[in-house]
Image 1: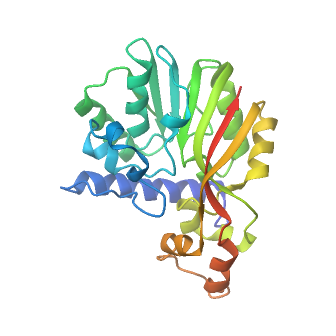
Image 2: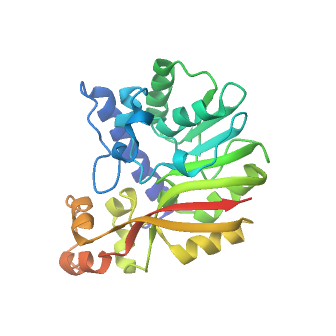
Image 3: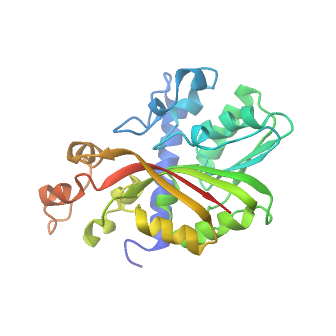
Length: 271
């Protein structure tokens, strides 16, 4: 099994986010474990996050705010792929109202425990958190109006399956509206083998044209990819400060290669 196999990637991602959930639960001040160059709770306006449990805000590890991207309406069914501590689920629950429902799907038991604690603290009833993977969504066909996700799809080693599953569970005309990391140009293939880059949302990101092509192949239409923040060399270096760089990779050259190649983006499409 090589270092970039789906099983190894999934376990590395699970371990990282389990550790993040544990860090939030053990922190008396709920420090933002997602803080960084364009990631974390700073992406949410104060009027959105002020009424949420501190644990939900602290556990935000996203690269955008999909609840602002998606046209979520009262009575709709919303699914958050990779829901983490539940911030986007809880915000969406307020928008769909008591006649709607929001599902949060996550593969990390520690994150689900944190999310359910946050749900109870917030007193939100129209929410259900599910254990599972985004490659195998545990919901019937055509039961969801809106899919959101926040910097999660890039972490999957089988994005074609993720997008097919997303299309399957959406109703005809349903909205796919996610925040994700995309590449504006390819990065050297050797960098894809660095596990910390996978779990740090860089090496798993698709080139924007490939993302568009995969969405179309899964059956989506009206595809839009809108970069919201392009990361320079200094930002990439802050993300990668704790990487164990193999001796055959020049770290300076690698950072130069990624300068301006990575972007946060809003991605929209219709089923």
